Length: 111
Length: 115
Image 1 (cartoon, rainbow over the protein chains, first blue to last red):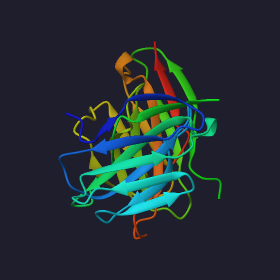
Image 2 (cartoon, rainbow over the protein chains, first blue to last red):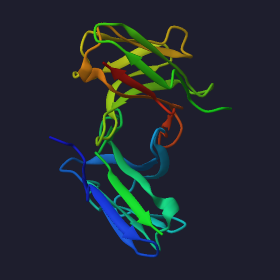
Image 3 (cartoon, each protein chain N blue to C red):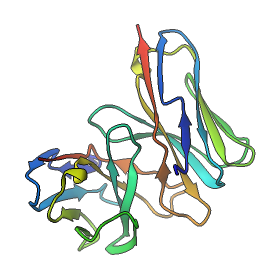
Image 4 (cartoon, helix red, strand yellow):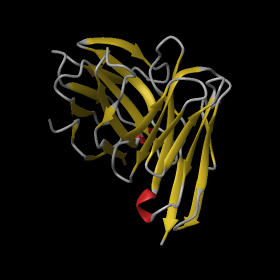
């Protein structure tokens, strides 16, 4: 059973569209992180959310941590081809355990 | 600072052979992690070190896998008697314990293909 469930698994959209991807769990996390990974490279950290209900913005990307700290979402406004990649959520469970990852959402933005 | 460096980038081996990968973390980072990633999956935790001490190993890690970080700097991951199921991207990451909200910095990985 996957600890962090990400949806959708694949997403293909046109340039300029908005999108939201989700990261859900039945477990509580002390923090959640979002990474982006390009083919043949390691994941690169985008953001860390720590407080329940927290919202962080990174240019056109908006990240939200659920009130109960069990889920998170990533919203991209006016997607661009450069946003194409694998978006991974990862969490640290209570007790400072090593980071666990979801399977990711593979996003393709078509010009 | 050149980031986390992994060597080799690609490794092709025959089933039954031993392979060793190296990871050089960011110099001031005291934690070092190994993850494995297969196609269509997220990275899967294997093991991690704090300085030279190996603090945790995944239950999924068979005894054919061993990792070392002898001087608390670089680390090696060895796989003995490789199997086709070992084919994956092996990712190394480092972080600074004590920093607010630990951030992992990943290398580009070693892509292993077992024929």
